[in-house]
Image (cartoon, rainbow, N blue to C red; front, side, top):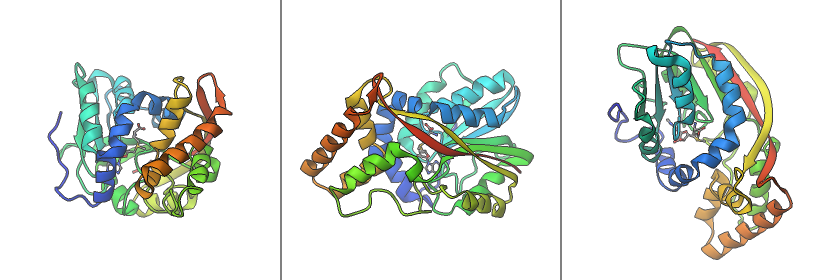
Length: 289
Ligand SMILES: C[S@@+](CC[C@H](N)C(=O)[O-])C[C@H]1O[C@@H](n2cnc3c(N)ncnc32)[C@H](O)[C@@H]1O
């Protein structure tokens, strides 16, 4: 594993704390469930990336590294892949998966400001599964990322469309709102899962950051909470999302437990084959450098 490259105080300090503390720990604990929830979207983005043997690729906001390892399989023994994430918790978990995989490395880095590719070797492409919506300054971040990719290189990522089209979070968020006067999801365009909900904004950010041939296509698939483990796992996963994390910070334990009970009651009506499934709607984004 390469050494940590992130500056001591990150431009995205709040996100660094968020993804290193509670959210990061829960994500690591529930890795298999989050992977199952996101599998169709990740596969669509990997399909759009079209990684070839011998290529050098960056996986941005790689989390626990599942897509990084998939890319490593595609680039083979003559290529390499670097997974970068702002969370030390996530990178500690992903780094455990590099054993016997010399072409994979993971680094702690703020994608908005840090150099991620080796200093003397730009990457052929960058990829992300839901890891690029958390930047304080998205244009600065995508400008920095462009400088890590060679001229003529490419980008492929997936990000969520607006929350109303993603009931897996908007439905529990509505229930949570009956237990708190505060919003549980960040405002439109603020860093968070729905920062790139608006297609025109994504296009404008990428174009301003120097990317061209920007294509943004809608893609829909089932998104499953509980990952075959059943109702309780689905409820726990829901309470680990941004909405659940925000609720936890806003209310006392008894109120949090009451909200959890209300979500359990709603999910119990929707349980099929040990998972609670919703339609998920994302943007599939590709561009060239
Ligand atoms: C929703 S998770 C997705 C994780 C992973 N890509 C997956 O699909 O399993 C978002 C990830 O983006 C990372 N992230 C947020 N802001 C970042 C930044 N400025 N630089 C690098 N990673 C960041 C978080 O730490 C987190 O791991």
